[in-house]
Image (cartoon, rainbow, N blue to C red; front, side, top):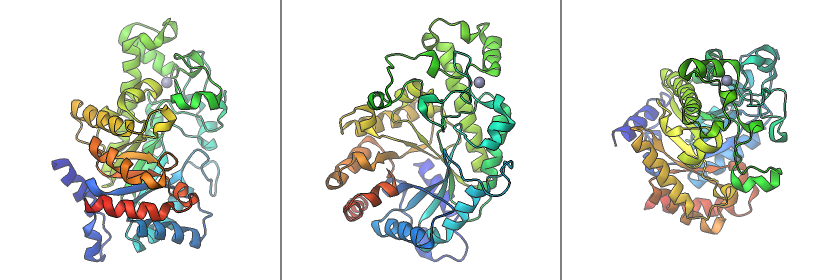
Length: 386
Ligand SMILES: [Zn+2]
């Protein structure tokens, strides 16, 4: 309860001066509705107005706006590290957010960084698999954007802190949202194996990262073992723990940077704590300095039945409690997996599992789906009334 108060207080602190009392009437976290949305510098005024207007009308309280994704825009000097496009996207969006009384959070990809300026300048900061191949030299899962920074590299951490600092300095922005704060998939979510054409009954060396020089050397100093010599690396608890810990530390340091700028720190994470550790080496219950974790409970990608949304939510809440982590949890729902005539049922799964509010992926998904805005508006009204 204390934490909820602290978060609400932090949000109130960022209401621009001169705003009416209406802005202070944001719902508490338990009734708050969030949505992810993709932003581009090329969007027209009509497009911004339409998205924020519809979101506001449906009762959405906060938008998490992607400003640096897998194919980031480049403005100006292509060798500059300053993320001018991300900054511009947020600056363009802010007046629409303020007009429609929507709280705005800047969504960035974190360990998964594809910008060419960085890849060219510091290829050594990128992760290496158990076969000794850099993720810059292979197209993992046939995805151009699968290029991953190593969380053991202090220089990579500094780089990300700088990117966060330049966004977090924007007045009126409520928070920074870290996405892709993980390793590449050692195993893809189970429902994706067939469509991606992979056989992953266990972890194979091609998909097992990070065996860069720094990680190998750190682990050898700690344990006397060079991880490339492990016959079954996944069964070595110390090696798994090493990777969980360096990623948690990376995330915690970035959240500390966000908080230092007085912004709300949040992250999108995999669906359940145990699956996250296993599939992407993400021990998110141990991310510190963070206000809210958004597990992406996109259940059909895991071949889960619908009520698993509630189970996964509960597992997350319990894992945070067990880790002594005061962060709140808000379940992320995939619009394509939530039929428009059953939205209240899914909100109920999240709520019953202990979620603080709900978050929808994505506004574009809603927009593409005939009749979804209306159904969502009714569902949100009901959710906030109960
Ligand atoms: Zn490494």
